[in-house]
Image (cartoon, rainbow, N blue to C red; front, side, top):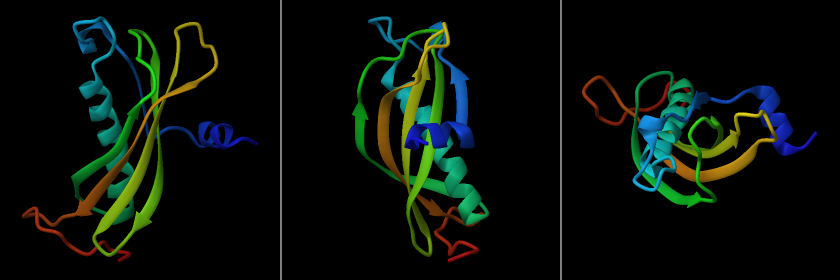
Length: 129
């Protein structure tokens, strides 16, 4: 089974439909909206690993491979890249399918770093760390 087929069978960390309100002036989906979806997905995985709240501390190596169109099914797949006592590195890939249900295509990827935080927003050791 291919890497993507394996991820598709595991399911995404987030799936949504790109809507007209999410477009930029050129009519494509705004890159900031895409990054927001990626952060939600990556933060979900990091919070599960941390067993609590996390904060985004950096976004690195963003690559936008092609625009997302209105109506595309947008799926974010996350892979834990590294984990320390307080931080989690998560690779997030965005794949889309058009409205006709064609093959999925990777359109964006990036590396997000999250830190486990306590109720006051200060870094804390994760329950596993």
